[in-house]
Length: 142
Length: 249
Image (cartoon, rainbow over all chains, first blue to last red; front, side, top):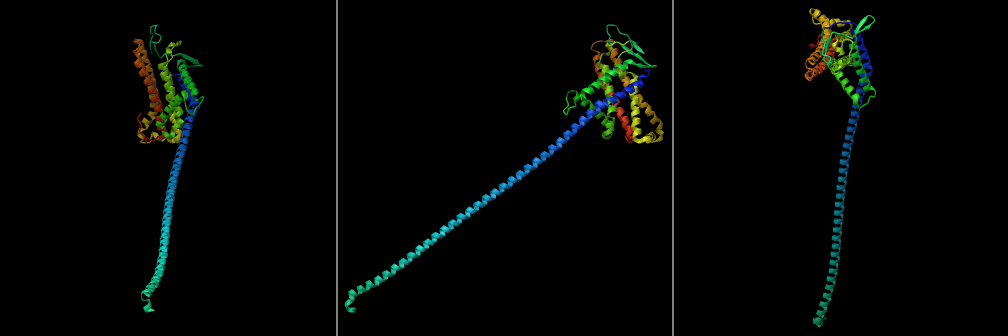
């Protein structure tokens, strides 16, 4: 059972030979393949991570832009409404003013005419009353 | 040493231990049956590797996938023993140890070599020959001495007297017990497994040996793992040295 002979060194040499051969056709190429795959995956992952973060930044940017635009449009609308309000108020005030003015003018004219009429009426009254007086007392006075 | 000759009807059921199919090379004797099966194992490994790396894809499939799994396994094995920093150059050695022993053991257990008649001796796992296991164990010894010297030069000897010179004899003894235990553990397990299966097949040819055969497959795998792991542990110890870690072997 324990007969040592040339099998021992030959087996050792054979084993070393096998190791060298396997190193060339098995360990090296497959290790390289595995490591390249690892690199590839890592690289892709980093790239994808970058792209994702970029996309997220862009999305955030758009969100911000959108919010900004929305705020601007809101402000614009508010301003326009305020303007319109102001214009309306101004126009109303103007119209009221004009109406008042016209009313006043008319009133004034009316008053004037009334006074004129009164005055002419008074004159008439005067003359009439003199005539009446003349008629009644005419002879006496005259 | 011991041999049962079974009835001729059962060519599978015979046991021969200590009989070898000798080849003479010059005036050297070698065990032919060990080399025949080891060449089969080597061919298997080489063919599997060629199939796996013939057309390397980024997305592995088929044989490449399988061999990448095997490579990952031995890489993890080496990494666990040697650490992330040191393990790379040692992967071929430890990995080949594991693959060679594992495929040897399983080929011995799974392939009915006894159907192939040899003039003398029988085909079996190469690892059930003490020459093979001692060769591998001595290579492990050389490997860890190489690791120690290439790392620390002659300072490697400091580890023999490092905690205290009193342990010097034990430290020296360790260098002998390491390959001894490595080789005999593997040799004993595989040979014993084949003997148990052989004896059971001899006694009860059908079904009864199956659980023992399954157990044998399990032990074979474990022994390959143990051998490779211990080789890694020894190399790690030589690289680190100075007893700053206390591994139990």
